[in-house]
Image 1 (tube, rainbow, N blue to C red):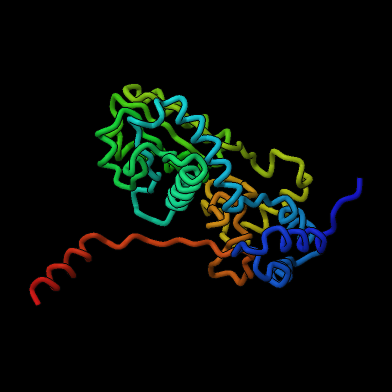
Image 2 (cartoon, one colour; image 1 turned 90 degrees about the vertical axis):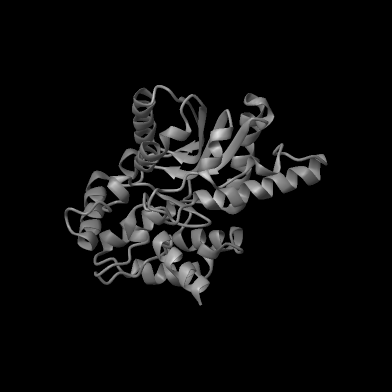
Length: 294
């Protein structure tokens, strides 16, 4: 079977995703990124992981979410006693969950135009304030990818009071086996919460799929350690997640990091990773007091 060349692959990406931010001038950016390779072997390795990178466009994510939400709506009384919320990390950093909320708004609008009735039963079915969850029987928490389930664990540690005695439905675009195992542990720890896990696709580590030989994989590890040092939590992606995924709105830190690395070591990244911190509440209050006193 004939395989596609890298030039053909890039041409296909530009044609298929010409409206997507991450594929603007992808040929130029790929050319700069591949020059990071110090040897012919490293160039082959980078080429292979790029060829196997799975991209999720806005339309693809919207279609996947819609399919899952239709199923959840059927299982949970038309969502009449439900609220949908983003899984926002407790440190307030930027996350893909907010982007999914935007896509769900589009789904609701399009279904309303198609069916001439709202897909979500009430205006406040979709919300962003976790405190609002106390009023509902079932709470749907959405996020784009759960790689280690570390964010889920911290989220429950800080917010479990809102979910006691309720049905908690986690809805993810992507999930790993590692995350599913961790969530099973969390189910036992939070036995007073009823868990339901829904996801669109399950993804595997690069070391678990037939992408690189063992020798190539070890060389990839060396490339990553060259960037981060030997003890970083971001070698091959956060906590060794080793994923090869890219979303329309961002590249997750679970993805092999040489795609998005930006640090002290000279390295031309292929995809910019967005990380937007939350404004400190105390600073906001100080400004508000100052404004009111003027």
